Length: 463
Ligand code: BG6
Image 1: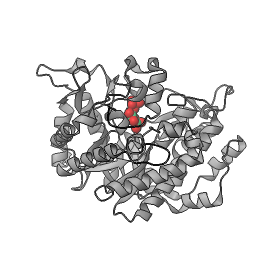
Image 2 (image 1 turned 45 degrees about the vertical axis):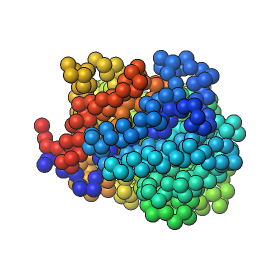
Image 3 (image 1 turned 90 degrees about the vertical axis):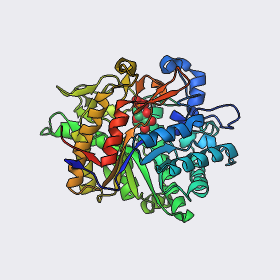
Image 4 (image 1 turned 120 degrees about the horizontal axis):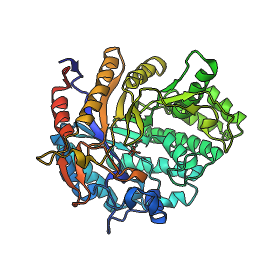
């Protein structure tokens, strides 16, 4: 086999609770921020589709698990919805929620699929949003208590946990670029939320150790390798370094090394937005580093020095401008560049600068609009572009592993089409098609068949 991966390699895919489950009468789920935002402003969501049904994983989880097995997955990451498991600020457990997650875990295990559970995927319950969300220290403590509850309820069977999915996106989406709730632009609040998210993550790691459960706990970060246009130009280089500091190192360093990069702290201080810290909290971060890392990789960031003076509210763009790389390969549906070698560069960076921590690709994928265009005569979505996308990334990953990088798996986003926040069902990511106009009818795409064969053989040959 030209590209052979190890026997215990994770072949799987990821989704999340809010993007797959839906919420239904009688399920006792509390409202979370996306339910609320959709109710307030449905026009912001593609074709007015909100999270209420999503992919109906809540009712169809057995069928989903069966198909996931059929496409060769040996592991599946999803997230527990805090708002489904816990009813209120007092931490009251919703028995329906607990029963649902127990059933999902058992179903996956019975089919030989390892459940990897994430504790937060952009979905803060409204009872905490109303108290200031992650700007409020109480939310941080409540998150740690909720995490401890999850370890107690499900830790006998779940062996890999994730504290947060893409915490930087919570910050940038909600407090800078306004594509997540509360959709404000305020760098000082953003910095505080980031710091509190890190603390919440570190406290969850602490709670996991205290729980005495077997297993490991990690964090999922979306890493965007940053390339500048003119690497020999000092100002250009600096623009890339600053973007890297803000978007990558701000969670990578405290989560893995237990401390913030000095340059980041200095920058925040210069801007007058550095949160106040307590020595005992920094100690929590120092001690409670993660066991492993999940890397979500979709696209690189290409920056150059500013050509015009920056005006407007404080934003990361004060320090750089993004530019389009001539000849870049694009996924036009999502507007993201496709650049496979970056996956190799991430791996080498983790090997050389982060102690070669064990990690896996926790998301990588290609969202395509109007996939109906590719339905063939027998009704299958012929998504050759997705097969090519996965294969080309795996080739670079394989090279990195050959060079000693500790990557233990590859998860595609997503096993099945799921609800994508404001983009709703515009772009389809799954290896399993979900026909949302026909009671979420499921069918395996061509990529699902290819994945089954690849995972089954633990690799693939050159074409
Ligand atoms: C990741 C998120 O950033 O990208 C997912 O963890 C998300 O929740 C995925 O759905 C794809 O991005 P989008 O914006 O197209 O849904």
